[in-house]
Image (tube, rainbow, N blue to C red; front, side, top):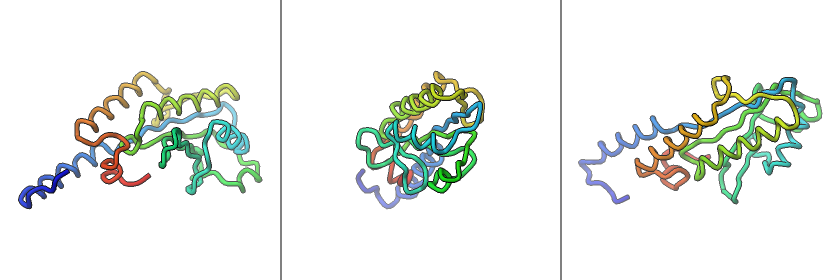
Length: 172
């Protein structure tokens, strides 16, 4: 983007602040077990699905060699996973899956990865899929919302996952 004329800087800064305030959104869902999930089992499933434990204590999926996480997995009632919790046989009511839309180069692919992960858990234990408000997840509505968010970002000249998106919305 070329440098604006000095008299236009304040207007341009105001525009980009509004873009960031209205479009710094994410997707999150919960996989809630009918019974409790052993942290040890979560680790096994996460690694089987290609997740790696990140420096924040959350599992991260970086599909396609992405330098930043495309999906993160967290325990629902604790801030992070840990080896100590595996050794203590900690259990969880479920896991959270999600991602930041502006910083994600492939929001739809990340959503599909979340769904694949949730279905993998569901094949191993009875569980439900819930949205961020803990209501049953409506997959078609989520797909429509993700498409709309990606379109709005692109129309604002900020492609999801682009260098501009990382500059505006922060690093992962």
